[in-house]
Image (cartoon, rainbow, N blue to C red):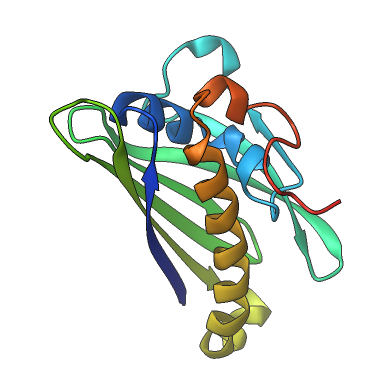
Length: 166
């Protein structure tokens, strides 16, 4: 299994940051490794346990679709856990938001992603970490850029609003 964890600052309120990141389809706007993101239960309002998201990512020279499902969410603790599984891999992403101060603005985001290859690719798990670190570093760089925008979540949802390579 490969694990990546990072903590970044957000210029937004903890609630804005949580709502933006809990809608995992927004990953397409900040993670250059996500080619497309879509909320599958878009008319359902707030993200809840069971909400699902389709992300398209590059994998071995092809496009792979992952359907992430919220398996745990706590608005009170500003924590959300997503899982995706297919014949190739199992992924678990955990996001926790903590308020930075009494002013109500600014917060920190701790993002942890665990990926385990499955099936015939299972023997690759011990070497997966090296490549996963590179992918994670690129995603965190995009997340830092999105969360630093003082215009807030609406500006971060604009396609190409991050430093996504063309």
